[in-house]
Length: 96
Image 1 (cartoon, one colour):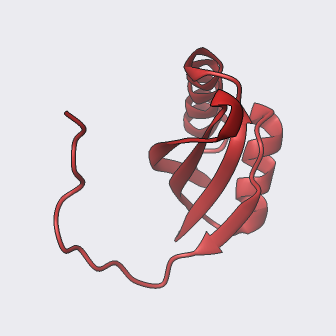
Image 2 (image 1 turned 180 degrees about the vertical axis):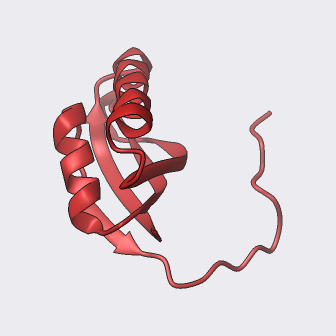
């Protein structure tokens, strides 16, 4: 599998919508496509008008598997970018 960044700006009206999509995403990925897609993590982003989006890290066999996963979930996959390397300067921060 290869690692990708998927951006989904303005994908949801609120956190409740995102939670429903996230649960469906996990179910489809874990139960229907485990050999093609793995959700690693997501960062939730704030956008104009109070909408929220995500920047997600996934592993997948190819970009088409990510598109198929997004289609099944009913969520956008606006941009899919391959990750070629990881540089860790600090661990992921926590808010608070």
